[in-house]
Length: 319
Image 1: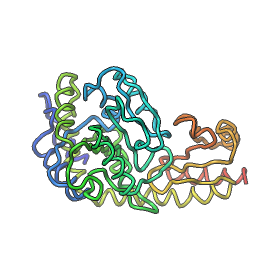
Image 2: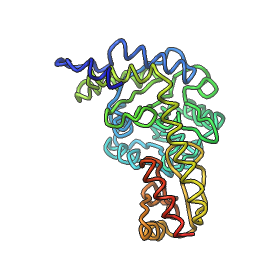
Image 3: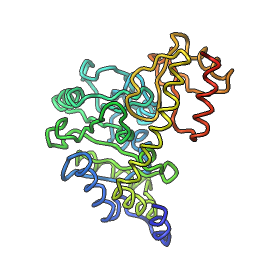
């Protein structure tokens, strides 16, 4: 990937908003090989956060339109809805919401922060419900390659979407699977009308993925070996941290995929954060992700091997 980036460094012109032909082909091929869907419309993005934060705006949703987001979620779903003049509505199950004035549904499986993975049947129920009401389902799937005790499924899996991309949009990032957070490399695939709206808006906003990054994306999507190596690295860290967290008195919930352990000691999250800080361990308070997380904390597997080992050792002081 670094070699591809360097080889494409002589790129003084504006890059194509829709991506180079090589990149579009690489994304389409990966979606077919990995997700099992052929012929999706695709567009590159400056990481997946660009899409999470700006999709309501890209789609031209009217002010006051409701955007359904996970009840426990990365804060940018909420922020993106508000930036677009929309109203974020946290829900446990989108199909139980009032569909009136809903313009977009966000799914996130595997979840940040909980690591929960939705079954194909559960995702399909949301897609079927949304299609019946003419609502787009956007699925943030940046942790899809990091399943531990179960295999995550994409919204573009034929078992979910029935072989049609109508009304569904898969959002992907190479930050986790390929360790390319600093490259800001991602893409969306699925519903052709949604991809066309995203592309048109991005042209005017100058949100162009730099040509060298596009070349690195091609290299990354064409190589599965480095993804397996990256997953093995996180798995080894999880094998160190998970038993240490449990031995320290935490209950670990969900966490069947992704880069996090979602844990509770049955107390206010800030009390847990304070107790952890007293032994030199930093975790995110669950309240950051919604009121449903008020008694949880999120441990991350993104520190170095040495720091993960140190955290596991320090947690013994809480046992």
